[in-house]
Length: 289
Image (cartoon, rainbow, N blue to C red; front, side, top):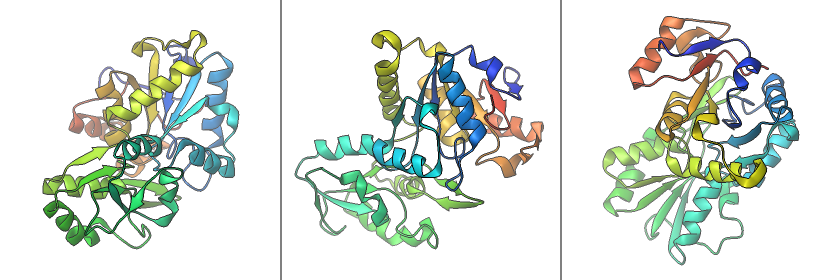
């Protein structure tokens, strides 16, 4: 923690980096409203020559994520590209060819499969499972899926997790995500393929996106790449595992653990990082230029 600095504004810190891999939900918006100061900070970074890749754990293809951001009013000049576990999931589904899939998640997530030659099947006969979330995340909890997960384990089904988040903010509420079910399945001994943060496939995809938008087509050294996020489990641990710095935003998922994000309890922040054995390069209340 001694090497972690606290910053009020991103502008002075930004000069150390050429590419941002920026989390979306919790940093740029909360599922209901856009954080205009965050979007402005990303746009200013791009104006100064930097490149921004939004790296989300939302279980949708990048074009669907962009449509959602448009509806919230996130400005297009705040980012160069979007990397999503939905696209990583689609690559896995396409590679499994004629195998039949059981989709565990709400019908709104079916866009993951759009345009793919896929056959759906019930859990009793499917060859594998794609989990994008709870069927009804407003009323259900992972405990409600105990029997189904046990049945899947007995069948030795592989679960492809399209969103490793355990929970996420929706306005002022926290709702369970696919990661909660995937972790429960892994705890049973089931095999899980995680398509999003903190696992390497989505970072590799994001770096490939960065290569396409950086002048000359080459990605700068990882020392010039910064991850921005609000989750210890996904953003901080994922950045550390991939070998890049992290700017941690305390106004998101962990705000209640550190008191008020306007005046965070620095001792509580230090304990959070100590508990996972890694710390970000810097901490900020919110992303502001």
